[in-house]
Every structure is written in C-alpha cells, then in structure tokens.
Length: 135
Image (tube, rainbow, N blue to C red; front, top):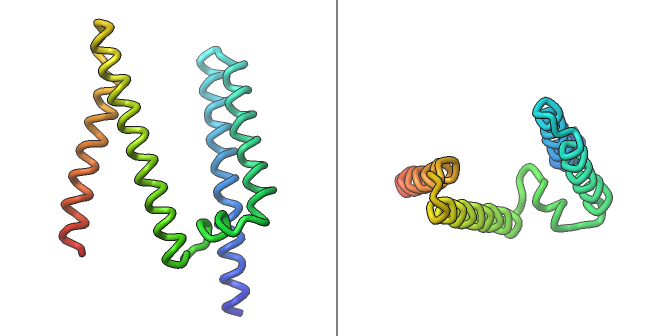
C-alpha cells in the first residue's frame, strides 16, 4: 500500500510541473487577450504548451527530471535543484539590475525594475538571517 501511495505522489509531482506550465500559459493568454494582444497571448501559450509537452515526453526517460520531481529527492538531486534555483535567482537579479541601470541611463525612472531588485535584496537578506538561525 505504501509503495502505491509513493508512486502516486511521484506521478503527481511529475505531472504538476507540466500542468503548471499550461496553467501559466493560460493565464498569460487571458491577460494578453484582456489587454488587446491576442496574438502575443497565443504565442506565449503555444511556447509554454510546447515546453509542457516536452517535459511530459522527455520526462519519462530522463533520470534527472524524475529525480528533481520526486517528493523526497536524494541528496544529489536536492543539491542540483537548490543550485538551479540559486542560479536562476542570480540571473534574474542581474538582468533586472541591468534593466534598472539602462532605464536610468535613458532618463526614465526605472521604477518597475527598482522594485524587482529591491525585493530580491530584501528576500536575500531575510533568507540569510532565517537560515543562519536555523542551521
């Protein structure tokens, strides 16, 4: 019984990632349609749906995908996932910082990018403080 429940949980996790891509694509399509950009919404939905399909098809044979979508991954996959999230955070923060600087250099306020960078900085400091107390 326990093995069956564990298998169902793993299957659910593997399906939830592609499902998330489709849900985000649907939200983008709806938002773009409301904003008067149906074509952009369709393109965005198509890209996210294609990514979802690729995850479904390739995920069956990929040890990496299966390891990262398990409910309790082993130490190797937990480390890979953590490093991937850290790398993603660095890329997004640097990209937003560059956009903020570019906006300032163009004579604009850079307001949306400022808030992304400020949120990243505050979140980083909060996590360092929280995790340093916990470990």
